[in-house]
Each structure stands twice: as C-alpha cells, then as structure tokens.
Image 1: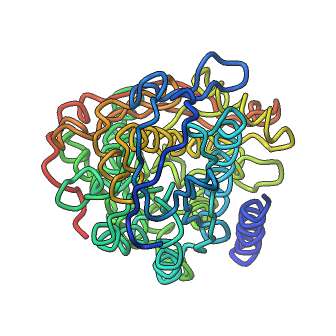
Image 2: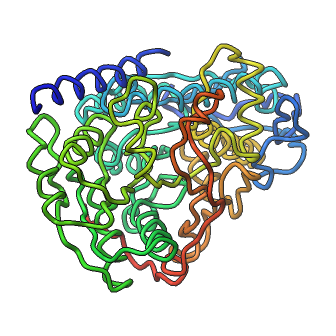
Length: 460
C-alpha cells in the first residue's frame, strides 16, 4: 500500500509541475513625453480598474522627468522585472500570476500606456532557487526600473539588503510578516494578510464556527513556513487550544514525509494547520487519510492547489470534505474578480481559469500606481520610484483585494483581512470555475483585529 501511494503522489506532483510549465547608470534630466493618459485603466466590461487613489484622474506632464535605469522616454518604454518561480515547487501557482501581469499591462498599453509610455515585462524563471534568484536580480537590476514581483520569502530576504543599497523597489510575492516590519522592509511594497495573521484568522474562524480544541501544526522551515506556524501557535495560545503535535519546520522537501503523517495521526488532532507546497501537502495529507484519519485541515494559501480536487486526483473527495482555506485576493468566481475575468477574456481567451491570475493583477496595480506617482513627481529613476511608491497612503483595489497603506505606522498599516474564506468544490471545478465554494469575504477575526503588531512573527 505504501509503495502504491508513493507512485500516486509522484504522478500528482508531476501533474502540478506540468501545469506550471504550461503556460546608463548616470541620472539624466530628460524632456517628458507629453501624452497624458488616464491614471487608472478601464478594464474590458468595467468602468474602471481597481487602484484609483495613488494619482489624479489625469497626470499633467512635468517639464522634465529624471530617469536612469529601465525608463527610456525617447523610445517610450518602461521595463519592469519579474523574478518568478515558473518551474520550481510553486511554479503551478506563479505561472498564472505572471499571466495576470501580462493581461493587465496588455490592457494598459492598449489604452495609452503609462502617460504614453509602454510597459515591457522582463520575466525570468528563478526555479525557486535562492542562488539563482540573487543571480537574476544582479543581472536585471541595471535593466529594469523595479521588480513587479519577487517570488519567495527566503529569496526576497536574500536580495532585501541589495534592494536597499541599490535604491530599487520590489513587490514581494510572499506574505511574510516581516514585510510589515519597518526594521526589515525598506524597499518593498507588500500586500495581503501576512502568513502569521492569516493563521490567526483561519484558526479563530474554524474554532468559533466548528469547534475543536486539539491542533497539529506542521510547516516547511524558513520564513514562509515558520512565520505561518508561529501565527498558528499565537492563535493556539490566545484561543486556549491545545498544541498536540509541533511539526514546525519539519517538512523537508526530498525527505520521507510519512513520519510527519504518522505523527499527525497519532496526535488525534481535531485541526491540522499545514504550511507547505503543492508538492508535499498532498503527500502528507494522503498518507494521513490512508490511515483513516479525519480532521479539519487548513493552512497558508500557497499550500492549496485546485489540482487536489481535479479528476483523477486520489485525494479529491477527502480534501473536499476536510479543507478550509483563505485567499489574499478575490477568487476567480467572486464578484470582486470580474475585472480579472474580463481582462483574461479579452487578452487570453484560451487561458484556463485560475485564482492566482488575480494576484498578478493586484501586483501590477501596485506597480502601475507607483509609476504614475513617480511620473507626476517628475522622477522616474529607480530611487524616485521607491519614494513615489512609499508615498501611497491608500491604495484601493476595489473588491479585488483589501486596500493597502504604505505610509502609516506598522501596526496601523498591517493587513488583517482575508479577502476570502473558501472550501474546495468539485462542482465548481466541473462548471468551469477554479474549484472553490466561497463562504466568507473580507473576513477579519476578533483575534487578528486585536493583535498588536510590533515586530515580525518569525525572525530571519
């Protein structure tokens, strides 16, 4: 039985990876382009795209605009880099995020670009390798004005000091709570509820609505897994729950994960909080349920993948019964994701629906507003873009994601809202959706609401 299960897990992991594969240095004062374009982008079938607060409705062209790297006013081009895991462990999730960037900028460029400037994406596959991530950053930093995303917590940590020293800003494709800590984050614009606070929302919601007191916590090591696990432990303490298995940092890719599944089963937990990747979560889950174990399972959003409930998945029925998750953005079938569906229908009509396309759109909106603000201030240098981005006080994404504040004190700007709580749904998947049933929107638990944020939950 064990050998058969390992084969099934290997086939599922292969399917997930296959899905991922589918798809001058001196500052100069330059005369500005004089074409004024709307500060917001009208998406197909909508009146306006989200993200309307960072710049006026139209941006008057300054007499001069400073530029250095990544902005060529004569050629009418802005280059934005993406450090993306396209073929590594999170490739199945990051590939559709890149699609979100592409369709958003296709739409912006079709409607005049950023005040007449066309945005070009420079996309590199980091393979979720820290050394390659750093290498690609070094290669791109003299070619792009900023980074539209940087995949992975340890990877972004690895370039964090360089971003500050080089005066370049990036949007982290990671929800590490450290990005909300000014002592750690100088040149990053995060969005979404951090892993630590996400865990509080999930456990508070589950125990309040369903009950349960015994919790097993298991995670990958490092900033992603342990920030999430620390949030779960804070929730366990605050809610007077019992930690019956502490597997923080115990998911080691490439090692035998059956001992973790065995420990979860032996703990007799009511709730399993797991933070892993689409390659290891189904292995641990599958080996636990193969022993007859039933509990409520939950965890950080990157732990979830719709492939778990796809036809042929050996865990589809059980995980539909057991999983409850959340999202940092409105999911594909949500009313708030209408702008995403319209963009895809217009620019990628053959694209398979995916919830994470919306994440790419949100990241692109952040970049768009920073570029507009920098243009308005007459400084589109890399450092000028950092200053412009950090001056955005209230970035409104409509219903696609909770608003963000990049100016206030850390505790005030901390994101506490899970955009969506969901359960898996094979019926939704069969109907052309992304396999989710939405049960709550814009959820903030009492625990997350009252939490005082003074420093990151997990120290690097």
